Image (cartoon, rainbow, N blue to C red):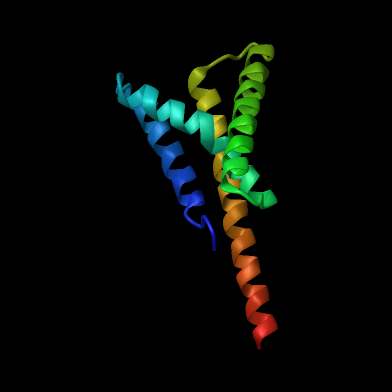
Length: 119
């Protein structure tokens, strides 16, 4: 049950970053929301699926994976000749939401398995 709140944090952070971008909220909300989301959330959405033992290592891997995913998405849009900060952000929000949904599905499957084992 450790860190069961991460999927909620990831989805809400993506929603905040997307809303701040769409509404052009400017300084300091838009950069702060984007920085937090882009630095932590895409990676944390997937690192949590491998169940790393310590929170420090989990956060370190999440930041590294986030920066990698951010770069790959941006590079993909540039190489396709379709660069758009909004679409890149939307893609990362979508990827993060998928990872968060996988975390929820894994937790649900684990609870169902535990319930069957108890019966």
